[in-house]
Length: 255
Image: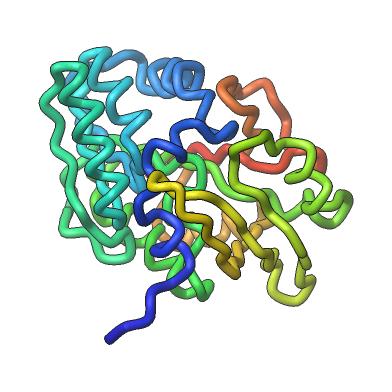
């Protein structure tokens, strides 16, 4: 039997609590930005990769867009379906692995926000498989909007201190952070309580990327225009030049 990876264990029975995490509170502003990027064109088909509890999928659907949400976690998808039902929305949520999506040239736009799959994978090759798979899902002149961890941040700031300053009571806590300069991975111990009140401790690691790496990876997949900005929670903007103070970066790429 295949051993579960930390990100699979993390998202088991962690839908309600996940929606209360501080980093999930920017949905409306983030959807405003997506709308502006796609010029409010309701005819476009949108794919939400690593949709989690469906917060962006549901909000965009509520605004009249055709969105398909995919995620690896059954409990997150169950929560997403429940929320959609409560909003009287019929949304296509599917359990899929982002490394091996079943779509080809189907979507006009793909979004992958708040570390939806990428960059949680255990190898760089697997993270690249996600980018490749999403790109295959897009139509010829598709647009891909994603956020990911900014590799410039840990070179100038403490990841441990950042998490300590942004964690509230009841949220997941991140301890023993060690950033590896050779792999650009932050290894940490994550402690949290699931929806059933079970306390869990997981050894996790996430890959941070520097802008030039992202540009090279996306260029190799055929993207012609790649713009990178700082990603502010709930307030994505093309006016925010990426700096070493940004924990995340926003990437807008077009084929």
